[in-house]
Image (tube, rainbow, N blue to C red):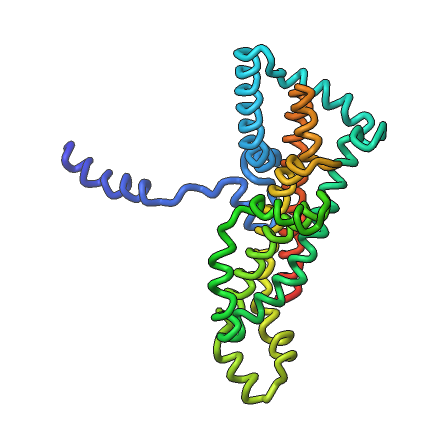
Amino acid sequence: MSAVYETIAAPAERAAAVAPAAPSRRTRLAAKGVRLAPEGGRLRPVVMKLLPPLIGLTLLVLAWQILALRNAGFPTPLETWQEALKLFADPFYRKGPNDQGIGWNVLASLRRVALGFGMAALVGIPLGFLIGRFSFVYGMFSPLISLLKPVSPLAWLPIGLLVFKAADPAAIWAIFICSIWPMIVNTAVGVQRVPQDYLNVARVLNLSEWKVATKILLPSVLPYMLTGVRLAIGTAWLVIVAAEMLTGGVGIGFWVWDEWNNMNVPHILIAIGVIGIVGLLLELALMTLAKAFSYEEK
């Protein structure tokens, strides 16, 4: 009797196991075209995006607090925050040529970076086009670039002081010399990677060199060129801080060195944060510019 029951019941049990489960309420609503919130609630994607950086910042503050507790002269995060509130209450005060708010010092550094970086772009990008386009120019400049590119930008600072006889143009010269190499190299690489078929078509159509550069080379080279610009601006902002420490005057680098001479460690930590934020904003601005150009090309 048991064997007969198993023979009859087994197909029914197998059919029940194979039969698909009833669709859930979300599946039925989605099939009807109803827009549903993501599973786990609307806040889950936001929380998962913000949680990792918050954890990273918490770990940084915790390590900072431990370091401050182990070193008597090192300020705690709370002490530095309180000092920052006082500092940014009036960031643009003037009490003399060497006693100005942090806002004026940041603007002075940005002015030097803009001048040196702008001149490097005016020279480096066209030179990169020529090096990538013509083998004779490449052979002429390639050994010079290979020789001079590894030299530290600060090694050029004494040359700038000797030639220009002043600290401000010497710092701008250091920015120029450190910014030009990424622009030259990346632009030249972009030109060299333009498909040869494009140039063959231009030769068949008898296009002028100007049209070849503006209609064929520039759209293809633009991503490489913008990468070189991004690398150059990051290097320029790094170098200006060190250059201003050596040359003095008004600038965020000089401000950091002056605060060190006064043993004002909270101000030094605040300056480190400001330098990082300004560098991040410069990077984001260039990334936005690159995306805008990429979108226009599409």
